[in-house]
Length: 584
Image 1 (cartoon, rainbow, N blue to C red):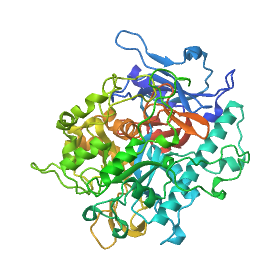
Image 2: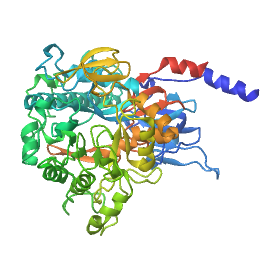
Image 3: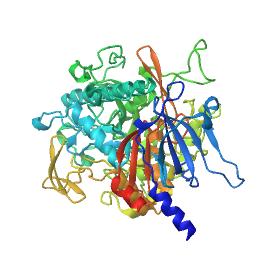
């Protein structure tokens, strides 16, 4: 009875303090602390209740983590030794009530949501043409579903559409980044209020580089993609650049030296599409010229060691130039055989797009791309890795990783073996048994995506996907007047919940498939160095709870309901209904 009374008093004093109420430390930094949390580790385990995590709001990163005492009675602490946990002056506290604190979800395949279609350039539905405001509004609303980062995805489209949409998404991404940098600067200056122009957009999910899904597809596996745009990359990388309008040098960049920060970037004439605008390209590897294109695209992922006269943190550190922007090549909408898949992997492909869908089914004499999940793939390709393994490689992204490692920079590493694979766990695209089989075969490679379209969050009716009409009935989205699936309308929150049920795994494993694994696909689970003009920018890791990582966080209960979302330490969403149940 005493224990129950104590728990009731704890629930009654549930604290949820907005970051604006914190205090300024002596050096001008502001801190937000999460307490009484069960925190997700890289291996999928959850810490015992009572952990705490501190965020520096002036940088949007995690600066301290304290885990509850272990079996020996010692607590584990990570943080800057110069700024120990006792020196933080924190009054802004979120009492997590022993719920799960996890990195936010990362959706690497999102065609649209809440009425926003990332493929609509206005060539068909002029009144629904995509704008920067649309992208920002979608970003803000995604936070309600636990998403803190996403790759806007464009379906197979015309050349004109790519030349319109890619720069537009880039303007939205730059606008978001500048707004965030200004807010963080004001935190360092101890200023609370912001001008109206700076509050133009709500806090929302990070807009990452784009996922270009098509148009290099097998015609028989195009699914809901417009057949008028389907083609082969017959001239390899040159065809890819010509279709997307990508320049060969990737050197253009917005001018960050512009002092007029109140002028939105959408009023500035945008540059043409560049390599740094793109994160992922999905193509069919069996097409003419595809292997050459894969080799050229993934060559950009090979980072050159910095010169001896440059400063570095150790041997093998790299500072990629715009020429070395990482492009992830994924295999999808394909009739590829198992051997085609092996060849694509050897050329640098690392991902399978929506496993099972728009590809040949598994057969015991021709396993197709699904067969690439087998450990046998590692045996077949391991010989090709030996010449590259003279130096001790960093653990491969799809292999188990030590618990709570220190953030580190990219180092020379071997080519991928088994690929990552994305799954749409909406209960319609893939049978629960097939979900479970894939996860049991290759759990470290599983990446949950929504593949959601603009109708997500809107309900039944006729909606658009690029220049096509889609009919929504319940959770099912099909091309109008057909039975062809046209993406999903499921949220990441729903997909992670479904996956936990379908795979029969625990909450930690399910969370990894929506957080760490997609971060590894993009190479973002470690600090990434990017060069913008003459400035080298270090982007913090995402998808992990580690000191130095981005404070992109979600608080969920054991049923994986999202209770709250923070992006860069800023509160983006609060589930008042679920929190009230905790207090009851």
